[in-house]
Image (cartoon, rainbow, N blue to C red; front, side, top):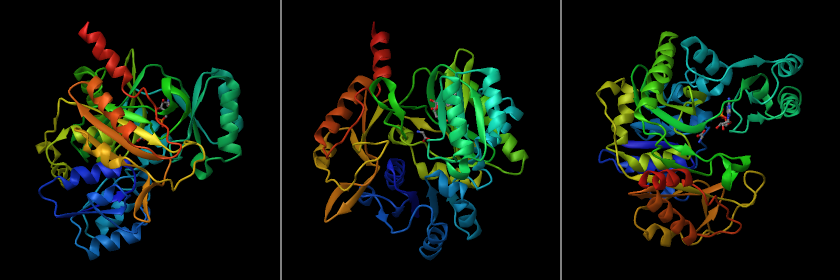
Length: 429
Ligand code: AMP
Ligand code: GLY
């Protein structure tokens, strides 16, 4: 079977890597892929949001399954277009992808199903939003309704912050049409975790949890990024919390979508806040998390292609996932300046040395080939991932690999998985 992976980040490299390991797969293609993905896939000069070109390639080349990584083509209807052309595609339809494409829609569904989430109001008029802020007071969280590449959420610690965010979104339109409406949300407190589930429109199979480090600097300082590192599993996501999330979040939302005539197939990702009252949903994504996937797939046993096909065909009730007991840690190496402006095109050295280390796999996130060598081509450049029998061991191994690699102005966090290591040390006492 031939499989096409759509996207070019670390998530897609991890997907292509796991898919290529399936004995059922004869060839993997990537649209457009990156320099690292070339070792497991043939990279095509097709952009990840070019729906027509992806459909044409899939039809012309007998692709058995297309796996769509990023949210933009999902919300844009790539899965709908592929299905219409008779091609199997993994991911939700455009209508189902609205769970990520509109935060207000997601909130409305959650309210309808009684899913625990922060109290909220939605607004399209700046005066009304501002009056609400005055009434309830800070701290608050202000969110642009639509897709804003992870930048549309503002934590407003003061009323002034909240007013500024409302002005930016509704008046200055800094997020364009994604900010025609916004949410004003209660601020929740607790530890965050990412929980993803395979869905076939009716059945739900949870994956193990992961924890993402969103802030750019150590100690969770500095601005938000797409994610600077990740680890899995997450001890605070206990079997009880998983059961609560399954029964109170995933099952009701999937059932509600089905009853609306919009069955959800693919991966549903819930960003959770683990509060004293149980897990509460911060956001839904309609795809694999990035960088969560880079620590989840190395721990997943069995054939990912079988699971994806079961989702598309509505046979997920026959699937049971198995997870390695090992711990996975991924450290993001980013371009100097990221998440603000950065330069690209710098040669990357040491990749072969890193790859020689046991239990290390370097997923490429923003790389390209130039004159026969691998160069930086994005904000997040590499996801250096390691497995180990403990978080202490996996983390040491990941940083050993990071230290073997270099490119101009590279930066990374040095405290990825520290929380998990601290818990290990406490447990040993
Ligand atoms: P989102 O894209 O909605 O997950 O928001 C990005 C980040 O903002 C989350 O990972 C949280 O750290 C934070 N966040 C979002 N909503 C809330 C909330 N209601 N309370 C506290 N933090 C939040
Ligand atoms: N890691 C957060 C996301 O994938 O949106």
